[in-house]
Length: 229
Image (cartoon, rainbow, N blue to C red; front, side):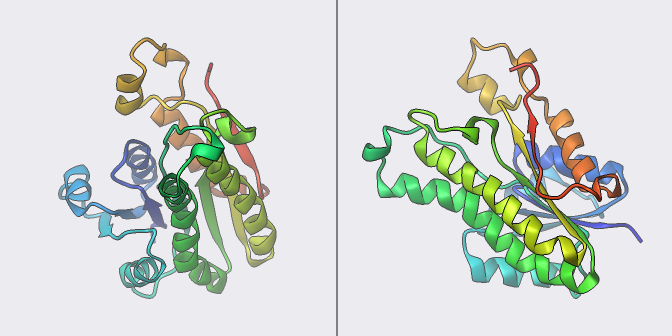
């Protein structure tokens, strides 16, 4: 029986690369994103990809939708890829809407997906969870307070969850990439050298490793994936 992998943010650039990584390993995918049209466009006629459209910032809807998609199964892997980035003003000038947006996209999505998936993993006595932190949030950065706070929270939550779940047979780790080579980043930084950035394929490969049995001794790691940047 193939493993069941839940990937949030599955219609985004990194989400699609992660889905492709696990498809290459023979897994069945529950692909989660807020936009059903984007999911269908990303995965047309693929019998191993089950699209699930839900707002991951809504705890109740997330649990309901993922439990329905799993239909009594336990997920083997949860990849919390959903997230977002915004530059901002100084911390004291950052408005409530930006704080909510960064914390919702980067923290609430992780917590809500984990609420839906972890009970089944605990019952099964096994599981792998991989989160996405950020290299830039290893320390505070000017004009990035809300983003650094939210991604710093991802790193600390990864460590907390690893301690809480390791004895249940569940590994929880994270990647901390620098700039990822995506079309959006190339458009936003046309004068930069994308050859120094982290490729989607390389980052997805590290995520695949952390979700594999080869990483069974790894708990609570926040792995820098920084390319040449």
